[in-house]
Amino acid sequence: MAKIALSNQTILITGATSGLGRAMALALAPRGNRLIVTGRRAELLATLASEIEALGSRCLTAPVDATDEGAVAAHLTDAIGKLGRIDVAILNAGGGTALRLGTERASAVAVKESMARNYDTLVNYLVPLLDYMQSVGGTIAYTCSPAGSFGLPKSGPYSAAKAAGRVLFDTARIELGHTPIRFVALYPGFTYTEGLVESEIPFKFLIIEKERAVRQMLRAIERGTAHAMFPKRIAWPVRIGALIPEPIRRWFLRQVS
Image (cartoon, rainbow, N blue to C red; front, top):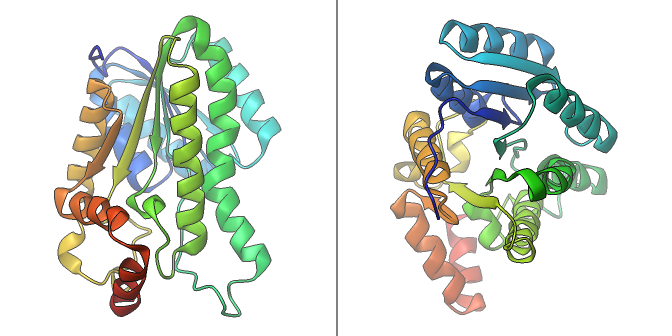
């Protein structure tokens, strides 16, 4: 797949008010891009926009609830109308908190809310972007997770949402392989961000710095890497775990949880 340069591009980043989304926006800002950044918190978007423009890129913000299909559609129409096009879309909205099934906290409402935050936020942007990019081309990158490979203790709803997103994204890649759309699935491992709860990570050596994660994500987008899971110390155990007999994997995960 042909490489692209993430400079002088119109780039949409969802979930940009914190974590990896914000870090990617700031990393792209010195490259003369036109950045469209979204999230639910208007005050954080305003601060981010000031930082982006100080670094040399134009910035268009929109406080959008990505679980609202109508709001997302209106946002995309407005953004394309103002900037003319979207070259790269980084669908990064989401996030999860520890939630153990069978406990009082894991109500049906809580489970569905987690699923919506991590699946609906993908679907609501992905579907209209597929319609738009079929004719004009572009890159769609999706921040998935190694957790979407199989069920993980304390992460059932999050893992399920990421698994659903991964399968949907892969299906889009197959069904629209004849179009000029590039699909890049990103699988960052545990990363030092605001949402990370270190006490929930069984092995601290698995956590990587945010800056490293951003470098690898942007490199994968530029190269058009179909599936980029990192770091290797997460990627290999996940790949091996998906291959071993399910009873053995289940026993091991019970022990580490």
